[in-house]
Image (cartoon, rainbow, N blue to C red):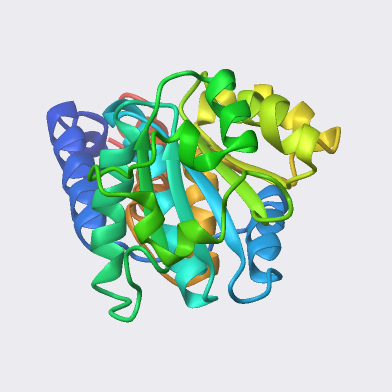
Amino acid sequence: MNFWDRVSNLDRRILWAVQMIIVVAILLRPIGLPIAVSSETQLAYDFFDNLPPGSIIWADFGTSGAALVELGPMIYAFFTQAFNNNLRVIGGTLWAEGPAIGQIIFEEIQEEFPDVEYGVDFVNVGYKPGTQILVRGLVDDVFEACRGVDYFARPLADYPLMQEVPRLTADYVDAIIVFAEGSPGGREWYEAAAGPEGIPLIQGTIQMSIPEAMPFLRGGQYAAIIPGNRGAAEYEFLVGRPGEAIATQDANSAMALWLITVLILGNLGFLLGKQGGGKK
C-alpha cells in the first residue's frame, strides 16, 4: 500500500480528533487572523467614537445565558470603548437575567479601568417589568419607573450619574444601546423611547435576528447594529480587545482550512492511489 492509499484509507476518527485538537488549541490561544469589518459594525463603532467625553448611554443588557456566547463579547467590547472614551453608562434591562450579566461584565472590565467608579461612570438600575409601559415610564420619570433604587436596592438619588438623568429623553441621554436576544428588544425601545424622543438607538443582535433588525437600520430607525458573533468579533478587533468572539472566528477559519485540506488530500489519494488508477 503506497502513501496515497494510506491517505485514502485513513481512519475518519483520526481526522475528527485532529480537528478537535485544532479547534480547542485556537480557542485557548487565538491566532488573531485578519478580520474584514462590516459596514454595520463600523457604523456602531464610529458612532460611539464620535460622542464627546461625558456623554451618557442607556444600555439594555437584554440577554440570558443562552445568548451570552454572542452578546457577551459585544458587551465587553462596548464597555471597553465607552470607558476608553470617557463615556458614562446606565444599565437597565427588560430581561430578568440581564442586570446580573451586565454587572458581572462591568466588574471584570472595571479591573482594567481602575478609575471607573460605580455611581459616577456606571449605574445598574436592575430589572424592572413592564416592557413598553416601563420604557414610557422612564421617559416621564426615571426615578419613579425604577422604584427609586438600583440593582443593589440602593437609592438612585445617591449617585451623581443618576442625578443628571431625571428622564429618558434626548435632553439627558445621548444614545440607547440594546443587546437583544429576542423580544423585548430594540423594536420596543425604539417605539416607546428612541423614536418619539429622538434618541439614537444601536442594537447588538444575535445571528438569527439580523434579518429582523436590518430593515430598521436601512430605514434609518436604528443608528447602527452589531450583527451576531461575527459583528462581536469585528467590534473586539476595532476596540483592540481580542476576546471570545475573535477566538470563535479563528476556530471557524481554522476548521474550514482543515476541512479543505482533508478534501484535497482525499481526492489526491483517490486519483494517485491504486484504487484510483495510479501506479501499482
